[in-house]
Image (cartoon, rainbow, N blue to C red; front, top):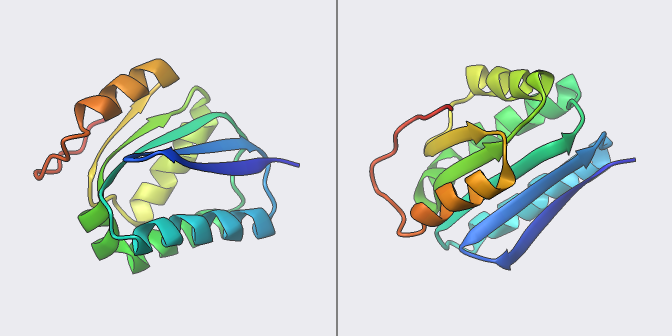
Length: 136
């Protein structure tokens, strides 16, 4: 079984690592951890490493979209930008499907290398105020 690692040790860089297929309990736990981070009311830049991810179930995609919709104002206030590291076309399609349902309220980019994503995130550590949608 897979896992979703929420790494807060490098704040203001918040790193999420999706590894393998996760069950609904693990997915709910991940959303609760993200919510706790939002409740801290501190700005951060998000790096999502999905290089080892498996596809999310339909219910998990719906939960993610609902979470984003419910917490859109907090995400806009606290998440300055997000870099997604996705190497698999199917996983990229899952992200696209989620964004059809609920767009991000912050600048984001999709890259193929973790090192590139870290550089992109570091460049945004000053927390830009004007969001712009980006996809590489």
